[in-house]
Image (cartoon, rainbow, N blue to C red; front, side, top):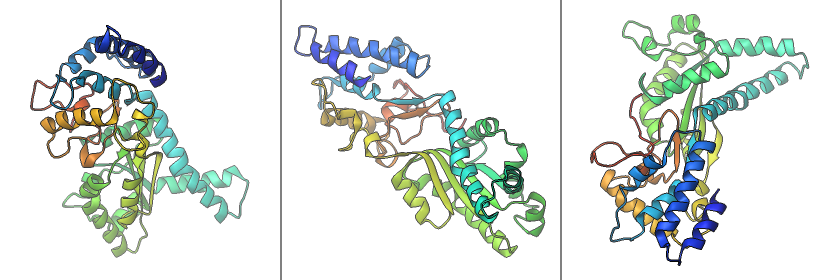
Length: 335
């Protein structure tokens, strides 16, 4: 997509049509991208309303074009794609490694009956968790995860029940009754890893201690659809997790303004990395002063059908004060 947009847009630059012609080309391309690729009901008027956020600044006089260029490289992951990724996460990051281990333990048997029987026992002793509280997007993701992988409700832990004041959390009684041997977190995106550790360290520390006190070995894993390598390394280094994995590992190519960014590999004449960053930085500071390019300088161009991560550029998702800012992919703290 980027090649055709840039080629046609380049022919506009330097002509009498100038930036208005480039903008028209980009808008047409975005209409096609939203409808045919994203399957998203995003109209040209929606994009035009969003572009009203970008008036000329001291940094540049072509803010709208710089914003449109970033949008043309945005990744929107629709519900269909999320469901496919959740199938991949379960198959490749959970089921396959366990089945491989079972094959070794069963002396490399080729009997699917023997392997399936042992795998079912392993699954029954596993509980899947979302990240954060009941209203967080992680819980919403678990609903899809259960549907796509034909899992029973019994393998999804109710942490509120386990942590109730009158419940002997992970005592012998709870371990025997619930058969918890493995806890697996399922998440859409792992950025720096800081928020994951903030939200879940106390809980994981508590259940690991209770497991040890009850003389049980508890395995804790974390699976994400997308993850930055730095976040994976951070979780692995925390000693809280036995396994950390992701379907797609993000690198500098997915960061809007990194030296490796794919957004500016084929540089159109109407924008540049420096100009695009200046616009996103200046506007971002008006929205999220402490993290103008996304949480911990995330610089991502990514949104899911169920929510937009705060690691993405705020110019795409901010929908709080100032109220006049029009978000294209609004973020909700709770869903």
